[in-house]
Amino acid sequence: MSEAPDVSLLVCTRDRCASLAATLASITRAADAAPEVSIEVILVDNGSADATAAVIAGWQPHFPVHRLRETRPGLARARNHALARASGRIVAMTDDDCLLHADYFAALLAAFAAVPAPAIVGGRILLGDPADLPVTVKLEDHPMTAVAGRFPGGFVMGANLAFTADVPRRVGRFDERFGAGAPFVAAEDTDFLFRAMRCGVGLHYDHRFTVDHHHGRRHRDEETRLLAGYGFGDGALYAKHWRDAWIARALLRDIADLWRDLADPVTTHVGIRAFYAFRLRHKLRGFLFYWRHALRA
Image (cartoon, rainbow, N blue to C red; front, side, top):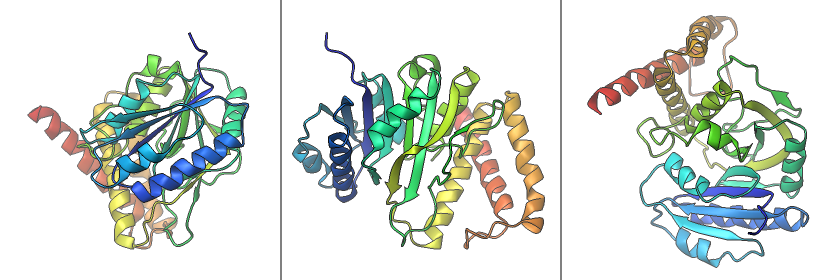
């Protein structure tokens, strides 16, 4: 039996052939810069209708690549398909609009060497194009560890996330009702993190392994829809885990934050007035939708 690779990198994609090609090229560069790190890449085409299949077929790097297809839509479903094929000691994920920095793989191993297993570590996410709005980024320049009992939303992000191979055995699969292309829109990564922390898995952030996110959102309405979706997904997650004391504390913090719309308003999201009220409103929408969805099921 061949030795397990150091890293399994999962990339799920749908109808982003141009950005995917750039992502794959960045993976090759990062792998070339770290010949001491053994890797495999697991690519899942989640029902693309553009030239994605040709891009995937044309990518022929020097390391193993598993090319999979999942025709049923849903990022969480595609990630589960990829996860079932992963054999690396560390499982990492990035998005099809992200570019890995050249030192990504060496920095990833260094990050995991610094924390005890089982562990989840999220990496730094920089804005890839200054013309894009400053959303879906993670800019902190120092390591952090999540506090037990705190809701993990936003602490790390699925666009640059990794975990030791034993984590899915403890936590289970991604909940396919959450995430892009699914009924609850978002929060598939947050749900996974929440369940992991409840199982005693350490959650960390390490700025050393970094990706540039070329998300392409440049208009206020795109940002508003994105943040509404994040709130909606978090609200559905609240409903899923409503019995948990962590969720009660998170909801109480959301309510307590409403005063900040007057005392310390968020000004970075220009298209959103009263950000904390906006966020809570969409969380409540998601909370109610979860229960309607559950009753219909």
